[in-house]
Length: 162
Ligand code: SME
Image 1 (tube, rainbow, N blue to C red):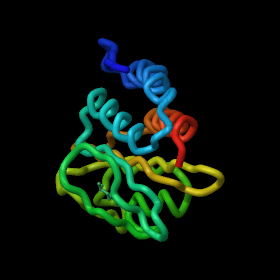
Image 2: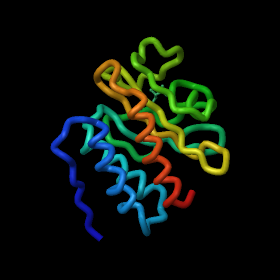
Image 3: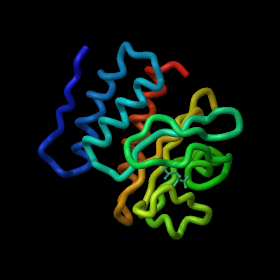
């Protein structure tokens, strides 16, 4: 099946996220492969928002391992509790970092990254993966991003097998 992303004229991010949600849900319907759906979600978010780096890290044994992403080269493994991603895994919470230089232990994959958000995907009470988005601007992410990215991650969990 072919899909084409339809984005609204608005630059308002609530409007953009609202337009993405049903399209992403329809993209995932009938496709149980987690990686295939992650790849498409990264592509959708990149087209909609053009952030510096958008990608997933998957929990494998006792580490996060790099998964589908768009952006420049990234570190492949992150330990439990390390950096923003490992902290989101440990705390099972979305973390918004307005200024990466002020986050103790931040792992800098790119010197261009200034702010970041990490959203955990939690299945059966355990973190299965994290969605990590980096911006080249300070203060890019807020509660709106946390809410809508959380809803998109919920779609991913609902339609994909682990
Ligand atoms: N900054 C992340 C590392 C991953 S890269 O941003 C792609 C962290 O501190 O966990």
